[in-house]
Image 1 (tube, rainbow, N blue to C red):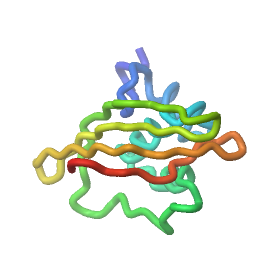
Image 2 (image 1 turned 30 degrees about the vertical axis):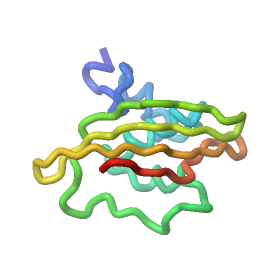
Image 3 (image 1 turned 180 degrees about the vertical axis):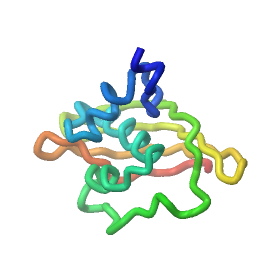
Amino acid sequence: MTARLNPCPCGLPYGYPACCGAYHGGAPAPDAQALMRSRYSAYVLGDAAYLLSTWHASSRPASLDLDSEPRPKWLGLEVKRYEPIDADHAVVEFVARYKVNGRAFRMQETSRFVRENGRWFYVDGDVAGV
């Protein structure tokens, strides 16, 4: 019932509180795919603080402005590939769809993640075909 009333933006068939909401509330993501999905949800919800806190210190920007106009309207996420490299490194390839000023776009990225002290972090990614 919660999933229908408050669906998670990441696309999994769970309600937000039991899915990405738990990670946004401080629970560690169990793997890089869960972290990537929670980061997508953070973009949808405009949660810059969560995005910065899950960005690895080696590549994290000083700030994020998610309120600049025009704001994208996020439409959906598709995970194309999840590849654990070893216990502390993984790659996630995804496609995120969005609209800006009524015009549709898709962003495909292959993202790299690292786990340190039991927590996963986004390091960087290669964007293809915007």
